[in-house]
Image (cartoon, rainbow, N blue to C red):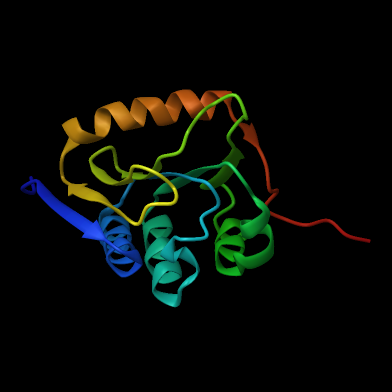
Length: 158
């Protein structure tokens, strides 16, 4: 078992680095909560590579978003991964009645990257700590049950 590691981050570059580091360890599940994913490194070449590797190892990706416009218009790499791994990638919209402002990634129920607010670029990353991930995972699962599927993996056209 790995030793628990806590990393504080401040700024977009450090946030991207800890997200990529957490994703590199994921084997079973990746849970993400955010307003739009606009500030995440998932559209970078490195982010797409690391996420593809996690999905290739069998991880299931579930994303909760407040807004989907950015993903629809600008997340071409994520959309390609959704088509390629359609059975393992799901995106849902948070209902308006849920007051969620936290930005969160939980990997394998033991790795946590957290920003207290969507607009903040500082927070913490805790790796290899199932106890740290328990409460956020429970909150995620509750929100997931109340959310609705959105963004079909394929686009139908005439």
